[in-house]
Length: 376
Image (tube, rainbow, N blue to C red):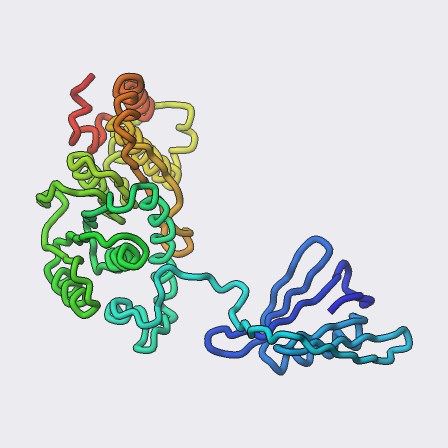
């Protein structure tokens, strides 16, 4: 609808589209104002009534597009309507997809493991109380996919998920590798036997023959041939244990989502160093956030010391989970790694020492695991 002469300030046009939302036919309205767009959805009866209202009270022209014809209705100053139509030479496709509907890398339809894990019904509909988890799974793959694609196809052959839990993200990663990249061997490491047995059974039902789950801890896991190491929400220093395993294995890609940054917080509270941010850290919530940033910042520095390019970014909105930061280490090419060893290692060590002194940190667990606390 266009040529608006009604009372709503700055309203210019209205676009209406029939769409499917949660398996129900709806009318999606896009109110286009001079400087913004407003989107609203109505059921069919409400939408038709609203369109009639706008045709009678505001818009002077409207065009209806159907598969093989267009109808144009115009209103003159006296309020009289004139209708004309035009046949199309080719039929158009009817697209009922919702404009805001996001294309997911992990599809719910016909997904055996999502159903077995209790996220969907037998028809592939995601349960209402599982929507956040489903979004989290997809955002994880959307972030991880481009990182994996930076390496030559076939580089990522052996993947280990440290602390795989119920396996939501482990299954999704295998699914992505299977369908979008060259197939890889994926292992989920979990200390709870019931979770290991559950996930292995689901892997069989899904036909994922190169996905397996083993009982154990990050500490005692012995495989050394690892190209991609993942550890999501490993608590406190368990994240450091996982990063250390990746460094030891010379893994091309290390991806961790840390949580429970208790070790560094205890160090800060213990030494109570006065610095320029002490006025903030006297509040518990700010101290907690500072401990998180310092912990992960030092982890990134240690990864850089061992020849990794690092990235730190939001995993998913904190509306879905407060554990929403990913720390990523990507192995540099050998020539670049050599340059880092020569030019930057001493600089990185000095940054670590200065950071610890500034915040009153006696040691960082990952620093101690790698032996960097003894280098200087």
